[in-house]
Length: 288
Image (cartoon, rainbow, N blue to C red):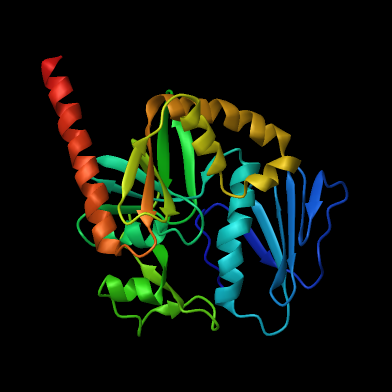
């Protein structure tokens, strides 16, 4: 079985016996971990073990499908590997639009992936889906673009005028599919703008730029599997410095969206905002 995983230099092995962690720092249902080891035991799926940021083994349970294994391997296990490497993983999807590196964050189901797909189907370059590794180079944050597919619900595909018939269904009981995206895997793209999506009960889109400590708080809330850090103090300490660097260099905007807004309408609202931001930035540079 050849399992997909975003990072190439990772050893992945199938085992017939469960692994265990001798000295966990933190445990909660299905998960135990410390700074260098991670264990995820899911009934009916598999027992996953990851260590040192470069090794994964899994013991699949009977009748589990490869797609189900990859769902968790490329989710929580991927997040644990990034945390072990102290490579900040953000819960967001990314694209490059008009040479602006954009990350869309927010809770699950708020529309990160569908909005990213809409931008990319209208000329933007796809970078990541759902989990975004961020690294700091010379004080500036960069997106590590190592995704080549995006997860989309059936209704999102319909809104985007995409046919689901030839797509891979992620798990049989869900109307959610892997949608392949063109991507220059491994590319490093500067992060310029973070949008945090939130659904509200108003009929219009409200856009609010965050300032000061609000930026840091918003970023910290969007760390992927932030709960893992309760058992990974070294990673949390490193991220403190990285989040400060990001909040100082990146524009962070809260976007309140109606629950029933179409993907296309929301994309147009954000596109207008980004273009206005670029116009203002170019005018300021021209004065200098």
